[in-house]
Image (cartoon, rainbow, N blue to C red; front, side, top):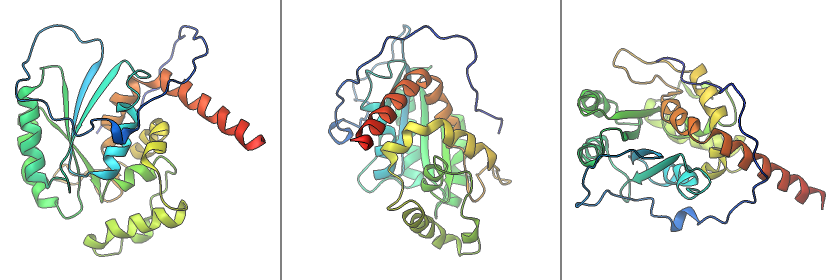
Length: 252
């Protein structure tokens, strides 16, 4: 896979100092947003890129993408919808749901099916061609979504866990994050540094012969790059203001 990470050169228009608007709690935002049955395709140009994310995982993925969904007014150039089910989807159900969303969506909308390798390898291998047929990008993290979260903090995966049985690695990775980062990595806070994760993820990206990411690899950077390209300047301002507030708080 090619190098997706790009910095934007050129001058940006000057921005006046912005006061952070109060945003809704992601838990109160309709993240489990299924496209309604009466949704109709229609022509016309959208001012924001519309991305539909159908996730096999529930909690951490919901919190991560919820950071951007809950701040729609701050990031007006992009709109995300997030669909999952209580307990998540296996890959077969994930693909079925993604196809349903793709069928109802506009031609220029982007549809992503997000899954972990975990114990779904054979299902992923079977469903990849079907997703490609329907123009659905399957985002795969090996072993699980936590490897993407880890790349927000470091470019060094815990390769000492590679010798474990495959089925035990996801749990071991979560334990590693809890120990290494004092309780784990908060997905809502990690999203602030999506550009760092893109860069670190690309350093370790390799696919096997079935086009599935190898251990400690994830192609989440391809989805993240689309999001970052549409949020970069606003995210930089938001992050700077947050860091300045934290510095002032520590000085008190």
